[in-house]
Image 1 (cartoon, rainbow, N blue to C red):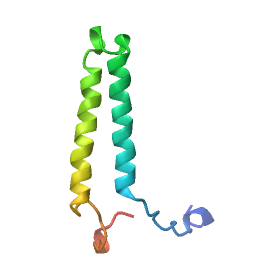
Image 2 (image 1 turned 30 degrees about the vertical axis):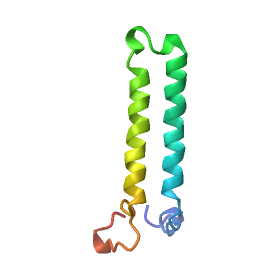
Image 3 (image 1 turned 90 degrees about the horizontal axis):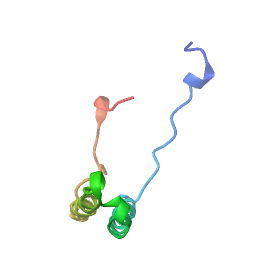
Length: 87
């Protein structure tokens, strides 16, 4: 099985992603979800009464995460994983 060429390929290099932009897209999605669940009565009555608050919680926690990244934390630049990196 280890002679199979598919197992001998080197993994592709990591893709650079702007984490703040990804997080802002997520925050925007939570905001849209909150507005939709608040406007549509069927999405916030009965057993679904918690849905708007769940979306609002995602929105607020997203801003906490954005502030964490804006403070310069939450990235792995310059970290040497050494031999403990998963393979």
